[in-house]
Length: 200
Image (cartoon, rainbow, N blue to C red; front, side, top):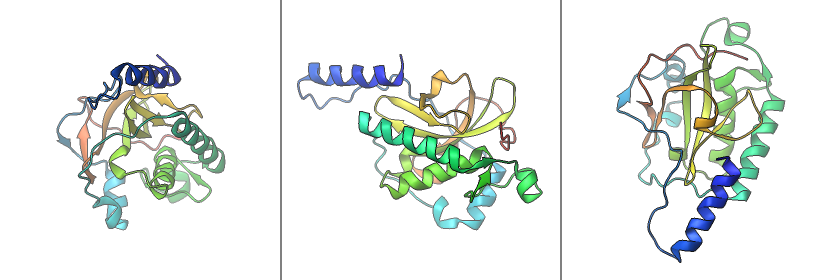
């Protein structure tokens, strides 16, 4: 089911519910495990940006997906992907991992951080904007921004301008930020997170 079909399905279900306050199913939400290690790049980012990694959320309610929200996510993905030139941390900073907000160049986690900052400035809670590390089908490490919604988790990726359900990407997800604390990470599936400095 595509993301647009998911939105339509949730709308139909809400009509059938006739105003019921029961929670709708999350057909493609990631299943997370317990606390796990913080990626080294994020740990060092937090040392430089302590306030960003100390946000504690009490309300864990996912965003309500709508045509307007989807359009905003698509617009943001395209604008950031076009504004930032892909370059590795090694090229830019002389080290394998350096998570930061990009100025005009960066690698995957920098794109994700930029999108996260814009959406937080738009008023979206940190609990719904989660940095996430994974493996691409070729085995390379990668990072995306996961956006939690009531039709499931979607990802904003620098490798595509499309906003996709997380389980439509072909990626192997490893860990992501905890919903209740921006400085903590939880597992998605077993495995050690690789370096995520891939620019492709």
